[in-house]
Structures are given as C-alpha cells and as structure tokens.
Image (tube, rainbow, N blue to C red):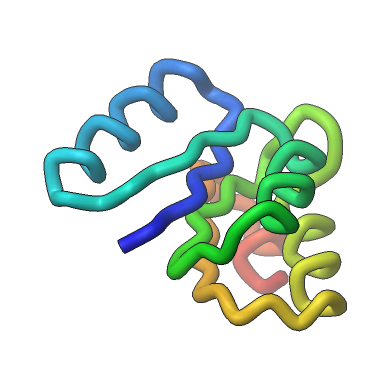
Length: 89
C-alpha cells in the first residue's frame, strides 16, 4: 500500500512512518499541506493520512483542494483536536 502521511509533528511523523513501514507499506512524508498538494501531483497514493493542524494551511483546506482535483485517494483525517467544531467538519 502506498501512503502519503501529512503530519507536522516530527516525532509523531517518524513513529507513524516507522510503524507503517513495518506493516509493509510504502510511506512518503510531508510536513506541510502545501508540500502534500505538490506531492500528490507527482504520483498516486492509495491512502492519505492527513493531520488537520498543519503550519501553513489546514488539513481541511488540503482536503478541499483534493476533492476539487478529484484525486482517487482514500483519506483518513487524524487529529488530536477535541473541539466539537473540528469533529463536525
């Protein structure tokens, strides 16, 4: 499985990438939403693991761009946010 991991926390990103590699997944890592959007134009991904709280643009903005571009990628949003507004979005 080919995964794009978008996570701005370096420690969490490294641990998640390591875990996925051990599960026989191929993982590319982006630390910003802008980098993720660029990476998505370079190759297709089976899954996008997308953090909401990114330093440049929000994960929800990344999601909007992806939907408009009609990428055929499954998206799993991950966040530590417990705010009800974020959960509803």
